[in-house]
Amino acid sequence: MTLTQARNFLRSELLAVAATVVPDQTPAVTQDVGPVSPGALSDDRGPESVCTITVETGDPTSPDPEALISFAAETLEARGWKVEDEPAEDGMYRVLAHRDGYDLTVEAHNTDWRITFTGQTPAADDL
Image 1 (cartoon, rainbow, N blue to C red):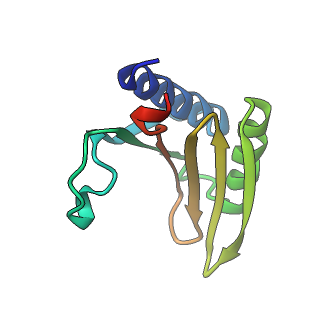
Image 2: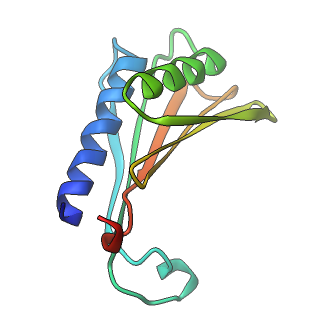
């Protein structure tokens, strides 16, 4: 698999999960970066080797972050992701998921009606 194929898989997976979790809304890709060096922000210049994508969705008429995160976890598990629940902290709910070297974080906050899905591809050397 190429890094471009991995990026395309990640993007489609994030959009599919987001559409399942909030079915009456259209998820939006708010970030699609890559391929980049995973250490670029720390000035560790290496080869371009990962892609990071963020998708957001939500229903402003029924903001329930705890329920959204719970359903996101169920949806990811049903799609073959290994899910790690994180304890709620200061009104923020989060779940982590892993699959074949891909990493996802899903977050929702008490102060916002949106749910955010952020994923990263495996490093190019691991594809």
